[in-house]
Image 1 (cartoon, one colour):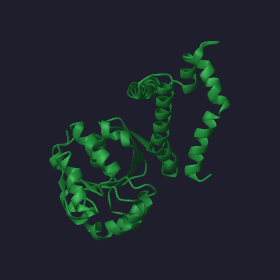
Image 2: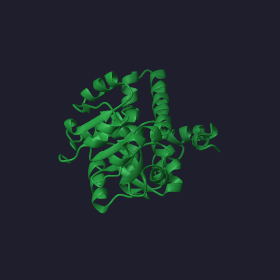
Image 3: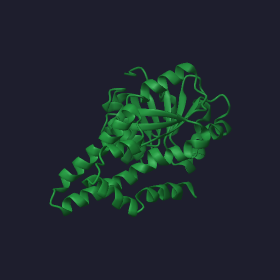
Image 4: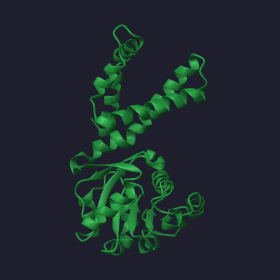
Amino acid sequence: MAEDVTIGFIGYGNMAQAMAKGLVDAGVVEGSRIVACAAHYDRLERNVAAIGARALHNAVEVAAAADVVVVAVKPNLVEQVLAPVATELVSPSRFVVSVAAGWDLKRYQELLGAESHVQCTIPNTPIAVGEGVLVAETDNTLTDAQTALFERIFSPVAMIERVDSAHMGIAMVIASCAPAFTDMYLEALGDAGVEFGLSRAAAYRLAAKMVEGVGALYVADERHPGAMKDDVCSPGGTTIRGVASLEKSAFRGAVISAVEAIEGR
């Protein structure tokens, strides 16, 4: 538990709320050690109350109160919001964790200066239940002590995957955008279950636990997904008929096309 650390969120939208909830539920920090500011104060007060965090009025107050400042505003607002607190953020007593897509270390150094301590990341929403992924840019300006604190805070709620700057974009798509694709897959399996008489709640639970288990199975030993697929495809069996149908419908091609659509190819 990082009981001696205050974590401040500049911006408190869905992703920031997921991160804060995950940290509190995992016992990393108490809610009272989290502070946040957002554009709509009344809504912010309601949102932070759910975990016992404190609502502050602006980024200046957050920067002054926090040891770790999480920049969670929309990417196009980062420069505008951080400009008034640049001096506070460069303090050696705190560091910045960015979750703003498209912002890398180089951009932050241009904004805050070379003396700033910054770690750029991309989280995903399962961090709310301690099963997240946190893609972290390999290039950063954290000290060894700050790196240790960063990992102490976030490793209980997410797998930290370090990626070079050039590949942060594609890593974001796979870890942070693809949950939406997976939600669609869960919904489709649920619809299929309902078509054949299974209750929707049961179908969703079965599908969700299946996805969770397949992911855990891969992470445990990193066997090739094709080999894992082959394990459940008996010759002439039921599963291979479904796999063949998916191949005829360009299932894998559709997934790749979705990623290419985000990456602009």
